[in-house]
Length: 308
Ligand SMILES: Cc1cc2nc3c(=O)[nH]c(=O)nc-3n(C[C@H](O)[C@H](O)[C@H](O)COP(=O)(O)OP(=O)(O)OC[C@H]3O[C@@H](n4cnc5c(N)ncnc54)[C@H](O)[C@@H]3O)c2cc1C
Image (cartoon, rainbow, N blue to C red; front, side):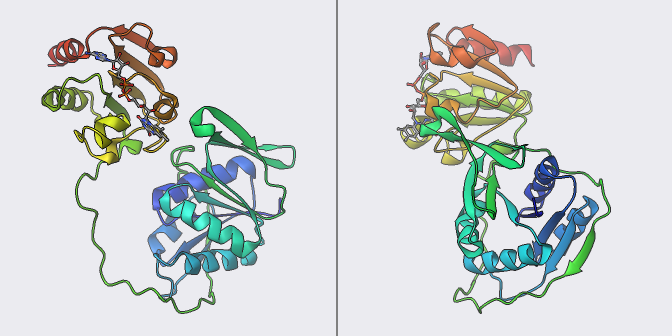
C-alpha cells in the first residue's frame, strides 16, 4: 500500500478515520484539512502528516472543488487510498473524488480490514438483508466508512503540519448565508442509550412517558419509520434503519417494534437490546438480549416508577 490519506470536514469523524487508517497501516498516514486550522492541529496531535489547505475558492458546498483539493493532497502525500466518512457529505464527495483520482469507490463501509495486501470492505446489501464483502481492484481507492465504526483517535502521536497550495477553479457557487437546520436537531447516532418506539404505541399521547423513560436512562427517543413518516408523531431525524440512521448505542430499548429488516439494519450493532412486544413471536426477539413479552405501555409505566 502506497499510503493512506484521510479527509472529513467533521473534526470528530476525521479522528475516527485516523483510527481506521491505523488499523490498515501503521505508517504512511496523511490527512488533509481544508480551511480548518483547529482540525489540522487535532489531526497532527493524533499522529497524522497534515496538509493544511487554505483557499477561499473552496466553497464547502462545491463538492468538485473539495474533490480537487483532496486529489492534490493525495498526490502530494503519495497516497493511493483515501478514507472518507460515509456521512451525507462524505458520500457525495466519494463519487466525485473517485472520478477525479481515477479510483474505485465503496461507500457505507461498516467493516474494513487488511486481507493479505488487499483491503476488505463489508457493507449492507439487498436492503440490509445481507452483508456483502467487497474489494477494489483498481490501484487507487476511495472508501467511505460509516460514522462510529471506529473510536476517535486520541493524542497519540506527533504528526506534522504543512501548508499545501492547491489549484482550484473559482467556484460557480456563491454562498449567501449559513442557516442551522430548523426543527429537531437530535443526533440519535451519537446517543449511548436509545428508547425507540414503533407502531405498537397506542397514540401520540403516550409519547411523554417514553420521553421520560429515555431521559431517566440518559438517552434519546428514536422510532421506526412509520411512526415518523406515516403517523408524524416524531421527526424523521429520529428514524432508525435503512432510510434512517444506523445507530450503535450501548443500550437500545425497543418498544412495540416488529423487527423488519429495514429497521434492524440500523440497530443491530447496539451492545444490548431489550425488546418489549406483546407478540411472543415478534421477529425483533431474535436479535434481542432481553425479551419482555408484554404491553409496552405497562412496561414503560413500571420502568418509570422503578427509576424515580
Ligand atoms: C425501502 C424501504 C425502506 C424502509 N426503511 C425503514 C427504516 O429505515 N426504518 C424502519 O423502521 N422501517 C423502514 N421500512 C419499513 C419497514 O419495512 C417496516 O414496515 C417498519 O419497520 C415497521 O415498523 P414497526 O415495527 O413500528 O410497525 P409494525 O411492523 O406494525 O409492528 C408493530 C409491533 O408492535 C407490536 N405491538 C402492538 N401493540 C403493542 C403493545 N401494546 N405493546 C407491545 N407491542 C405491541 C406488534 O406485535 C408488532 O410487532 C422501510 C420499508 C421499505 C420498503
